[in-house]
Image (cartoon, one colour):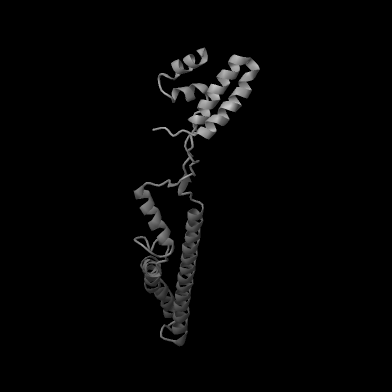
Length: 208
């Protein structure tokens, strides 16, 4: 059932009459009626405040929460941005160290001993020193490569985590709904809200 605002109705009638008076007595009457109707049946609804809503569906929200948790080392993706030093070292041993050691055994050592054998001093201290220097060079080279690999891996992991933080900070995960439409303001809308007989009612009123 519609709520009537008598105070607003009287105020609207007076305002409408003043506006309609520029068209003569009939205009005054029409203005008063329309103004009174507008005030009497005017909406008293409070303005709705924008409502905050998520822009993600439930599955997306769950994944986003896991993504944020991974930055802190939490959740199912807790190791996503952690540097796997053990795995990196195992990979280095398999693909770099072992081939280097095999090359040392199969090529470098025979090459050195062959040189000294030709001079019949393969069992001398010179041979041992040459082999020692060659072995140290191979080991130091591998150690340098391993250290560089670990450092770069850690730097990349930190950069990836920093990028993830910036991505989270720059992602808009919510929006605000628009307030409801304003109440009708035109004469046709006001009369239409009164029912199908409002036009005849107004015509009978003007005849009087």
